[in-house]
Image (tube, rainbow, N blue to C red):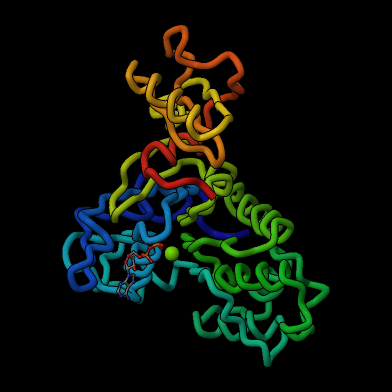
Amino acid sequence: MLGGVNGSDGTPGQAAIELRGVVKRFGDLIAVDHLDLEVPTGICLGLLGPNGAGKSTTMRLLTGQAIADAGELRALGFELPAEAKAARAQMGVVPQLDNLDVDVTVEDNLSVFARLYRVGDVGAAVDRALELARLTDRRRAAVDELSGGMRRRLLLARGLVHEPRLILLDEPTVGLDPQIRTQVWSLVDELRSRGMTILMSTHYIEEAERLADEVAVMAHGRIIARGRPSDLIAEHAGRETAEVYGPPARLAEVRAAAEARDVRVRPAGPAIAIVGAERAVDGVTPTDAVWRAASLEDVFVMLTGEEAE
Ligand SMILES: Nc1ncnc2c1ncn2[C@@H]1O[C@H](COP(=O)(O)OP(=O)(O)O)[C@@H](O)[C@H]1O
Ligand SMILES: [Mg+2]
């Protein structure tokens, strides 16, 4: 059984991650801007933000790969960066880019990491990780014989081999085929159901919506909204969205008329979307609009100004 079950370790009620006023600058650029972020033990928090929002930098601060210019950081009760080594021992990190060792077998990729983390029973740890990633029957295969999905699962298994209490997933499915993405989602969902604490960054709204218990929307180095997806939708979008299709001139006209009545409109690919359309007065939403339930995508685009992927 993997560790990290709520309340079974650490101080009860203690947050797994606590960031207060964290700042990280690169020259004149502020990548992380007075960030406050708390991740309670036992949840999957989705850090959702467009490219450049500061997600990876935040992850790197948590692993000790980067040092903050200001603020307080704690992971699993350890102060960072001073106690980064102790924190890392109980943390699993899955990088965005596949850096598996292609010269050795599947199981050797895992045993090297198990030894690095000074796991007591390396054989048992490797078996457990293989089982979890459903790679037991491929254990003696060379990494370059694996399919894309298997490689990705192995990368996750490697981050779990020492039974961490907390796992950091930086954009776990970026650039993957939809089919492989689904396999990774199942695995992350399984970790979540085992009660592991997960911090997962993503710029895919669907990924956050499916896997995260809570979503923190990040832009320009800060958290601009946080909550359960359904609460974020109710608070920032409303109940229903009406999409209007047509030539640009007509869309501009509809948009101007709506905004004149204080109704919010966002771009939606070739269409525009009237957000919170149930609250609009008669005449604002054209009769040929397509109504649908409000979504996390509406929230994301409204808050960040970025079109969704
Ligand atoms: N090592 C670095 N040197 C200079 N700028 C960086 C470095 N790492 C990140 N940045 C910049 O910091 C900002 C946040 O980057 P990042 O944390 O990678 O965002 P995200 O992961 O959300 O896409 C971006 O503008 C990026 O270009
Ligand atoms: Mg990133």
